[in-house]
Image 1 (cartoon, rainbow, N blue to C red):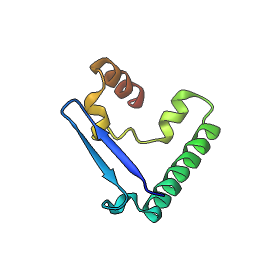
Image 2: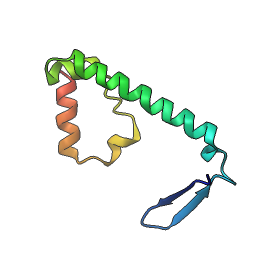
Image 3: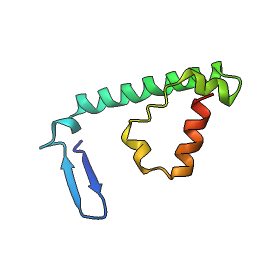
Length: 86
């Protein structure tokens, strides 16, 4: 079955199709699905292990250099940094 993915932002959009994008080939999509399932299992195990929010934060790396942290409100990032500094 052909697969299409539309990437859009405020500037424009781009359409990726499985017939011209190797990342949308069935094997690559299965790899991505397996990776996401593995990540979900790890997160489930972390949530089962931790009994408090503080304990959960002690089990994971915040990775403040990740691009995700560049777009959060300053107060949100400050609260996260404070939590992880405990």
